[in-house]
Length: 242
Image (cartoon, rainbow, N blue to C red; front, side, top):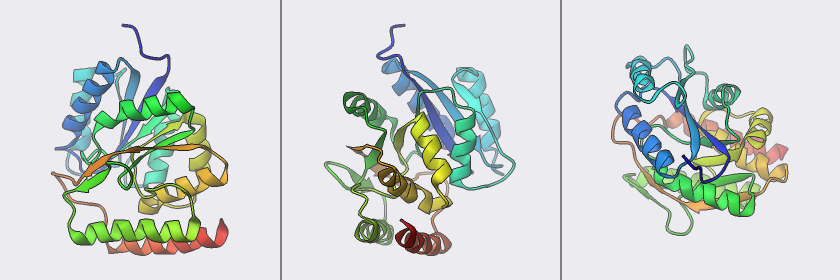
């Protein structure tokens, strides 16, 4: 098969209780990457899900093969930043794509990210819900308010020149992601925001692709009161130190 380019893309999928969503997102990813004739691997980092997510992942490995589905589970939840670091260690791609496994991010935007990165040689391409024809579907007013409020506060305090700071659908040059992950101190929800702040600090170029975000169909959101408290705390820490 003739590839569109010579690059390989490692897609990192951190999972926790995503038994229903995982087969669908993997199928969508495989369909998208095969159609685009990209060289790719999907690295599933399951953090000890009690719902049987890992067993589902093992079935997917049998269906699509070990070259395409790479299982790198961990025993328990250890935070998003360390999940990416863990996946990075086992990745063989030139570029790393990070996204949620809960179907809130549609793989159809990946070719746009790849094309934009290739056209300008960006270090990072991030999906944005808050520019162009991007948007959010399925959220109640409270969730939208929290997300917009978090974004606005961060823009005001840190001026990172990125329209969507808390999104988690991004494409990185592998070396850039390694550097950013090692320089970040945050965990969980705040981690994505700090990645963009550090990227600007280190002089990396960032491109944006408008995406539509759809709230999860199966399972429960991981965002709660403690995450919001941690976000505000981390925002003030970044404001004081960057």
